[in-house]
Image 1 (tube, rainbow, N blue to C red):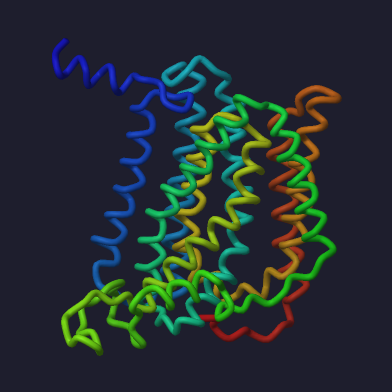
Image 2: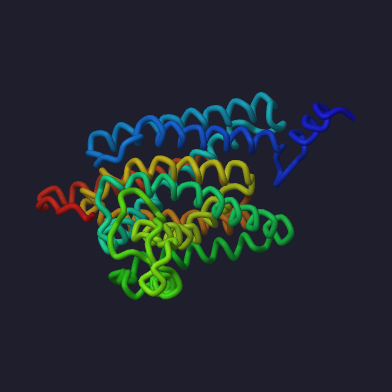
Length: 342
């Protein structure tokens, strides 16, 4: 067998339910977007304004919509697998919108983290984009493990469903506490076991400086690196809700993963607009809670009464999210502008 034949065989090898070439193609698109974003659009560190944030976010959302349309067409035409393209497309969009909405909660936490470490806005975007690389790996691991477990033990979906319902009910009735970053055990651990500079060093995560005891040059982490670590750990916490929510819609790991990553890509760009007006979305959390209860309940509905039409799931999800956004904007229409959180 020639090298080219071995390479083609490798690309056609099925990994987590889909050929390797599909995963390679998707990751190539993602890293291509990130390289263009960092290497061209944001080659120099600068503070991103609200208008630029909205334009860039619109680009990412538009790209995600095109990608979803591509999945719809490819599944329907049998270019990927012989499957129902409508079902694949609708579940992708449902997962994308759920992940997008759930990620909005991330904005407030990210703002608190940047504020605690005193990270200037002109360095925040670069840190967020680099953080996406960690998200791509960590979400991939979570989804891969989840897919393997669900395939082996399908009853786990009912645990996912019950967890989502319980989480939604908790969001509805239990008030959120204020996050105190200074008490975060990860921050304490890093400061205790790493050399961390007191001041920032531009966009650098690590610098070489003299050790106070030996006067030798050693590697020090900067506060920007600590902020990056804590943000990605916070994303893992949010993923505990979002990943089971998409698995409750579909067990197609390619759709679960791509919907997750596409939603997160745009969130980083949208962050700078949302952080300035996050106070206007106070009531969105109740809509998100109802979405989680609905998605969790759908698992039990499917078992008792038959599969719910994916179009209904998408319609209910969009209606709840849109209703939460509109009600929040209306309810807070007379509120004074909030100061920037970071």
